[in-house]
Image 1 (tube, rainbow, N blue to C red):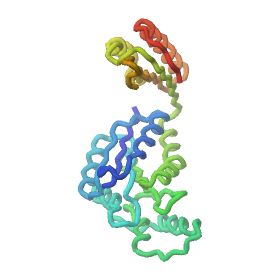
Image 2: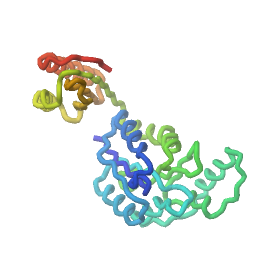
Image 3: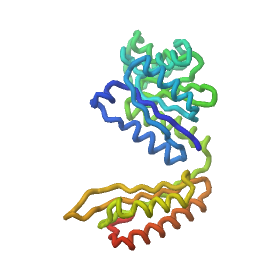
Amino acid sequence: MYIVEILCIGNELLSGITLNTNAHWLSRKITKIGGFVRRVLVIRDDLNEIRLTLLESLNRKPNWIVVCGGLGPTYDDKTLLGIGKALKKRLILNNNALDMVKKSYKDRHQRVKMNKARLKMAIIPKGSTPILNPVGNAPAVLLCVHKTQIICLPGVPNEMKAIATRSILPRIKLEIGNFTIREINYYVQGISEAMISSRLTKIVASAPNDRLYLKTHPRGYVNNIPTIRIQLVSKGYNEEVVKDLINKISKQLLAVIRKNKGKILKIS
């Protein structure tokens, strides 16, 4: 199993000011290419919290730790300093990172002075590698600790997505190898979760737990009639096996729906 942990840093995420869309987007993208997102952690812009949380994550030995937020020029952007403390790495001015920061302003036709705040975005842990930010100023930062790779991404969603799409997800995909995922959703009226829970438990138990995901999602009641979405996901490295499993489980699900007199409203 290829394990990824996501660490989101920012006071605004915990105060409710900002919705954590980064974790949702990353989790979905990583899952689709075959990664297993084991944890999503959200912490404040606090040096000790960053240090302790990173060390705890490293102790679990995931393949990747994806860190979001705290790379900017302001006083509360403390991610790299916290990571440096955790790994006992000094932060230094990285010339490649500095070139990236300067280029980002030049590409936007902004003539600015490289003051202390802007230089801060090029000061990264010793031995780490800056990754070009194609739509913003602060480069991403890549480190490797034993067999765990740590990528620090900006918290601004469009910057995070641009770097992840261009530089990080392809690397993860390459390491995972060929992976196939198929999904079917049944929108069913007249069946509640409790009516089919025991049968679905038996279906799940009959398949490898790392190859099948079967989940019911309640969608409320209309005129006291329940509606649910039944999500079926088959995944693995052999396309034929993945296809055979989803077809097999689909037949079993349809039989359960018929037996409980459910009405299929839509299949997607």
